[in-house]
Amino acid sequence: MTLTEIYDARVASGLLRPDPAQHAVLPVLEGLRLWLEANATRKVGLFAGLFARPVTPPPGLYLWGGVGRGKSMVMDLFVENTAITQKRRVHFHAFMQEIHKGMHEARKRGVDDALAPVAEAVARDIRLLAFDEMQITDITDAMIVGRLFEKLMATGVVIVTTSNRAPEELYKNGLNRQLFLPFISMLREKLQVLELESPNDYRQHRLQGAQVYFHPAGKVKGEIQAIWDDLTGGAPGAPLTLPVNGRTIDLPRFANGVGRGTFWDLCSRPLGPGDYLAIAQAVRVLILEDIPQLSAENYNEAKRFVTLIDALYEAKVRLICSAADVPERLYLEGSGAFEFERTASRLREMQGAAWGQD
Image (cartoon, rainbow, N blue to C red; front, side):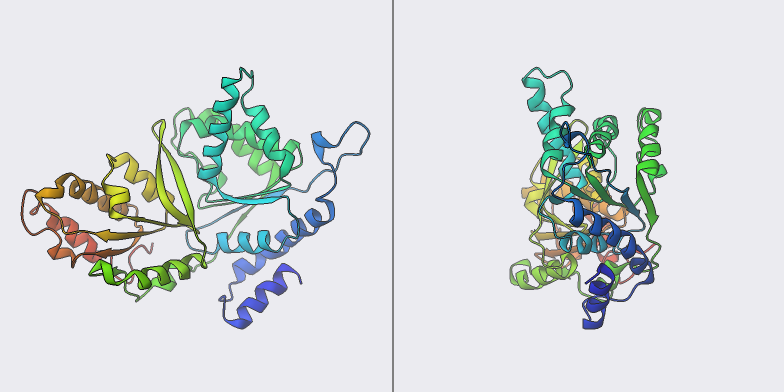
């Protein structure tokens, strides 16, 4: 079956809603699928050997569009149904953290170009590399991503990536952005750039009218898990590491644009506005579990919670949470109770059916 036929079968069974914009992308991915399946075992590019004739892969795909339009779903359909073993699907931030770690190890060995052995190790085992949620927010990523992509594509790796931004919007207003501009030109030259112009935000459709604030927290584990399964397609999720000002923070679980963690995961550690802003930029939906009763006894955690909610609110992130009580009764007495009234109001507003829609 072609990808289009698989998609149509899922629509017919009720697993997917028909979407012309998603449908239009499938023939492009089908061409990549057929090429990969026909050439996955052949030596490619720099690894072709001395006498073997190298194989030139077709251009990959840069698929961009608004949040919740089904980009990740379409890419996953492609990856899952491409019958090769030399493939990997990974969140862009997580992949870049692996690259930085590999470069750090290479520098300790005294390698002149720390990126070269890391890129070679990736290309040795992978013919298809699928990135989800590509965005450049960190200066160190901006400085190496162009060289990384160039090395991977030179060795015949087919790159497929999704992003919420057009290539020209990547790393917008970033430090020394002029040094990043050649990478944008390379994306346009080496990858087919398509916009998924669907008017529908499918994550919003799933949550529209649904309960998103649960209390008391201890009795709703099943409901929260059901929401996670629905939004992620039952994916187990994996930790997401985000770069912030030369260090990293971890979100315990992430899949398909949905983050998940407990109040204690995100508010018991000494995190600040920049950390919560990075989380808000990385996720479209955040599931936050086990918000406790707040008081002077957990004042610092409560302050961080307020900062987190402010970041999510400003970024229009959809929040699903379980808490000890309704927002207005989470923080009844002690220092900070008066200031919490604004947070309670925002928590209430964020429960609205239309919250997060542009």
